[in-house]
Length: 326
Image (cartoon, rainbow, N blue to C red; front, side, top):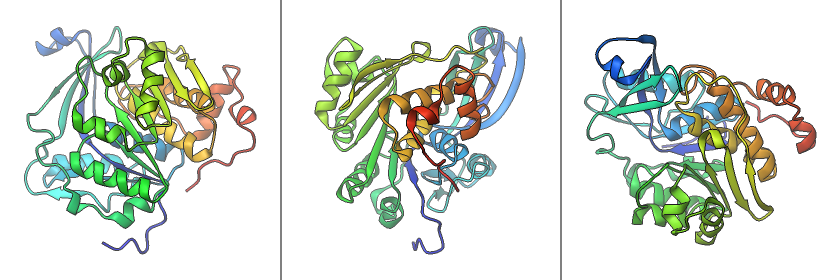
C-alpha cells in the first residue's frame, strides 16, 4: 500500500488495541452482584494503542497497526483512536465480531483494577506478509507490546536495519519470559517494562541489578515501572530511581501504557533518560486522576504546568526544545 499523501509519522505502534468497558464500583465482588456502581465508561484500551493515544495527545504524529473486527464494537474501538488523531490506514480488519473486548472493574477505594477478557483475544494476529514495510520504517520510532508475534520480530528487524529506534513494552509478570519475547528484547533499543519483568528476563532478584543485566541483552535503556513506587532506569548515562508524583488516585487503568506514550515523546524530543522519566511519570500521574485509561492524559503544555506547580521546570532542565507538533 502506498504511503503517498500521508504526513510523515513519528511513531508507529504494532500491538494490541482493545475496547474497554470500565465499571468503577465500591468493590469488584459487590459490583458482580450489581451493587455499588459509581461510574461507567466505554473507552479504547490496549498497551500500544493507549501509548499512541497519549503520544498523540502530547503532540506526536502516530499510526497504529493491528487488527479489528467488522462489527460495531470493532468500529467503536477504532473510533477511540481516531479521536486522538492516530492514523489507522494500516489496520487489518477481520470479518466477524470484535474479540479484543475487556471488562475492567475499578475499585473506588484504591483505583486498582480487575480485568476480564474474552477468550482468543490474540488468536488472529497480524501476519508478517500483512505489514507495510515502507509505512513502518518511515517512522522515527516503532513501539511494540509483544503481540502479533512473528510480525513484531520482522518489523523490529526492519527498523534496526534502517537505523531507527524500537521501543518494547514488557508486561508486568510474576512468571517467566518466553523465548519469542526474549528474541524481541534482543531487537529493541529501549525496554520499558512492568514490575517483575526484568527479574524474570535476567534471573536477578533486585530491580537495579535486573535492569542493569537486561541492558546486556540488547536494549540500550531499560526502565522498569513499579506503580506508586515510581520507576528505575538503567542507561549509558547512569542508573537512577524516579519517584511517582503523589496525586489523588481515581483509576490506575492504563497508567503504565500512558507512561510509555510519554516516554516515546521524550525520545522524540532528544531528552536525556532522567528528564524523560520525570516527564513520563507526570503524564501517568495526571492520567490516574480521572476514570479511564486515556481520559486523564494532558496536553504537552498541561504537563509542563503540572510539573512547574511541583517545582520542576521541565523545559528549563531540558534546554530549549520545541514541542512535538502536528
